[in-house]
Length: 307
Ligand SMILES: [Zn+2]
View 1 (cartoon, helix red, strand yellow):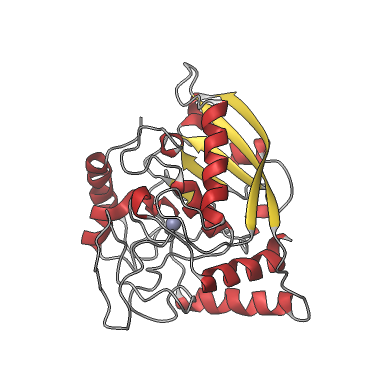
View 2 (cartoon, protein in one colour):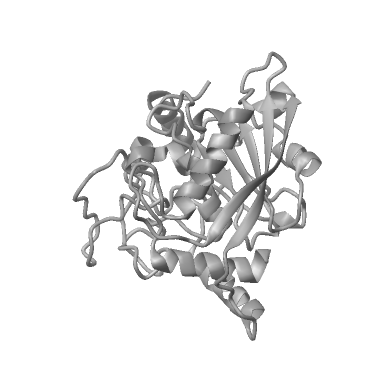
């Protein structure tokens, strides 16, 4: 079952107690060392983290120095290359990891609804708040498969199950539906994960539309994780510091938002916190849009790593 925020909070407080900066984090979310150095709360205050952590399985340390290295590499790759503006349709492969007894067996209808939500949110037509920015990315369900393996269902042997089930090239979005203590974990486009065949996003199955993850049951976790997969950081990356999320039109934010805190302004820099942005941690119903500059970044990352 999906962990309630209360249970999640308990788990995270426990996790925080054993996580020191620079050390690996919770085993359930610790990705391969080569591509995911660790999971630590360096840029998220402990209180905020405890209160708002449901999406933070994908939150791992990206230091400003690492950001500079990623930027330099991206610039080298893009030198002389044109960043496209045409609409890109991304094939989506969904892998339903059920338990031996059938828990987590998300229906084909709900998977179809999830792809619809992806298309709505990436085209600026969020069902809760239409009128957002059209990213130019669209999504097409290319396949769905099911695996009855209780270990995989609970995200055990993640690298194994991803390597064994992943489909398509770097431009294919693979979504593994599992039952773990987080809403989602994503690989970034510049990760070497693609080479190892584990590129994609792992998502709490009950977050799909109509699921039991209260406040996170509209399918926008997949929107958020796909944002990482396309190269976006959280809006609270680096807190109020620099370089932040490297997106000019998302005001700096000290920590993740929880719920939908209208008027929140956690940094002295101009602008209210972007609580309606898909890359914050707000409730699904609070999510509204990406920004123009986030779209530009996604297109750039697509051209560099996934086109
Ligand atoms: Zn995230």
